Length: 320
Image 1 (cartoon, rainbow, N blue to C red):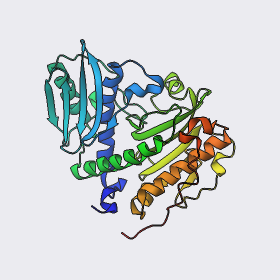
Image 2 (cartoon, rainbow, N blue to C red):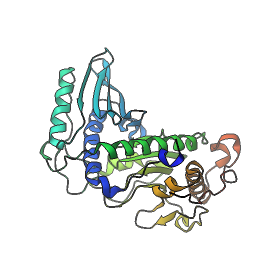
Image 3 (cartoon, one colour):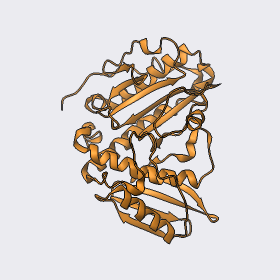
Image 4 (cartoon, helix red, strand yellow):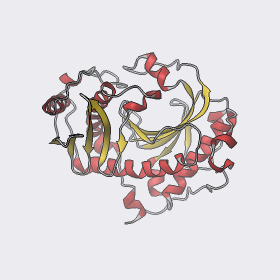
């Protein structure tokens, strides 16, 4: 298999309606996850995880047992399975959000799982309750499979990057509100509550998410008005001068509106060595944040040695 086939083409314009529908479906499952798990710091109990088959919400609690929910994006099924071996599933196909919600809740009840959720989507402007949404009903199997492949590759590289850090760090996990794959490093210091406003998210929710100083990286498909798939890195609170950092990664830039460094997914996909390009971008943007904010890098990084000199820039684009 060639490098370029591992990182598939994924123009948002080709599957934007499917992307929006899939985001809303994952939010329904994600809200069930919040309702059936204890709160972990920074809402880590709410997230989904990339697997060989798709996106999974594992080990949720009900009546003394546990259950998993899998978006099988390879086989295009939604699978619910309990620890006593019972399974319910239905096909992922073009269907309205309201119908997905009804079918999913029906399958949970068949397994004896009763759960109530707030049916308003999160982090989406001008949204309507899941139970009323018959506008979002698209499902393109080809592009869903491509999205899954992009998640698999991104998670693989991000896990390698995460392994370099021995301080507090999140898993590589998927946030269904913002619909992005993320991994976050912590300095160990607390942070002030965010001052911005996030659509359909209470300030106390954001305060829990950003209670401590972070450098965070991730991948998202570009929905919500951004327009294209990209990798990102940001720091919170952002240290003075961070946005002026001169990067070796020529294809990356600082987006002032987002307050994030952005590396287009296509730049990674077309690179001769996608892994090296992405790792170099993640490393140098983290290092800039950590240095400007005066993190104790010797204590936080594996082997007490910086990776800054290890990742030579690999921005040269290949053909195709």
